[in-house]
Length: 315
Image 1 (cartoon, rainbow, N blue to C red):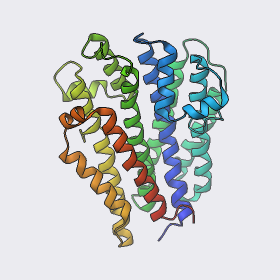
Image 2 (cartoon, rainbow, N blue to C red):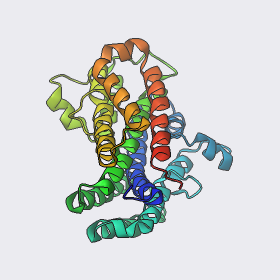
Image 3 (cartoon, rainbow, N blue to C red):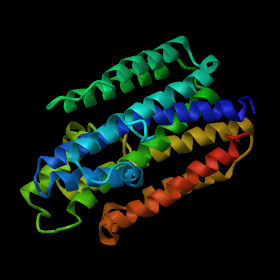
């Protein structure tokens, strides 16, 4: 193998954490938008973001109650939360330093500059009304890092491992953002199909920058079945699960060809991608969105473990 396991690991996790920083900002954005609907208490809606982000246990270990400002700080800038935006940027930069010689100058400088800027801003107190601007800053800096990488890196094994990190993390996030909707509506079904329900689905689309592209693809108002189809099955949508798995499949296929050795993780990715090609939105709705996403996350987590084992990330 041309790359050592630790180098491949550093590249993979550098891009997972860049994507995680942006995606945590998107989850916070989803929580902020949903909190404006007043379907339930603001506390309940921010609690749903903690659950969806998978950090509820870590939060409860530090704080005795679910206070909204406290929860936002924990998601955004708390070092005790390894998935907070600030922790993710720090970890991405740490991994980038480990593999600096594998990166172009532009890629490294974009990562380092973004780390300096975001660390400075996220360590400042957050005043009322500043959260949307801070979230926009995070998303813009992540786009800057990604642009420097895609614009300057050779399309080789290094690129494949970085691309894997990006899309493994992105698929995880899209599933979690869809699950925010499930958790917020869990206590009651009285609002399903109402204008409030439509507003919430629109908020989900905006949180993944998909509001305008949705209107291009579906010549209708917000409809739950169309939005689920868009974010799960539509391969032209760059944050859909199907698009992510097509990219994962292609990167693993490229690595397998270069190494002349098919592997278990490639088989898993092809199988999952094939499921998106044969399943449809009606099957998801009839079986339950939450149940579908739960099953997907089990398979997705298994794929991440198989990638680490196949390419000896810990060797």
